[in-house]
Length: 245
Image (cartoon, rainbow, N blue to C red; front, side, top):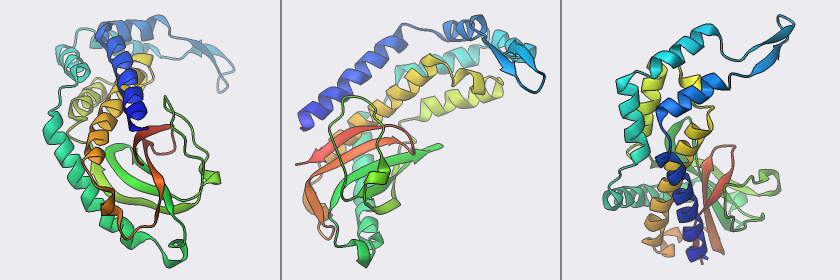
């Protein structure tokens, strides 16, 4: 199963990375301005452009912003020290597991842990969400899960820090904010592709981190094999990272 999971992650990462390698910040900004759509503004009662004149001015100005262009190029390169990062992620996982053991209430200790979701929200800091019964498949892309059909055992426990992995993306976001075009750019398909690349690169590194961990570290937590590990943004679609078979 892990060969399939890793192959899925690698295939998606390579696909999205190829898309990124064939684009530029200029193209993103130009596309946003060209496709400035009309929508009905119910406050004024008629059709108007999505971006106002001032927003278009900011987008035009950004096309010659050298700092923004350079940080975008650095962000799409995704240069990471894999060995060092895998070691840090492994430490984060091992430091979090004892917190999981302490968090499971006596009432829930009767249930076996079948899946763990590593979820982040707003910042590149993930925590553990554990579930008992539920449907936990291997998926080949980011997929929605119905958490109402799952038995929650613990949530928002521990910490896995993605900050170093996402540093170049975070810097790019900060420059977008300063250029007053953050809200516009993050809605572009290219930015969504960039974000997916960082997610997938993180999950490939986490795959290797979990691979180096013996399942015995979960002693003290009732688990049912296979124990699935998923990753995703909180409340959004998730994908397999690893499975303890």
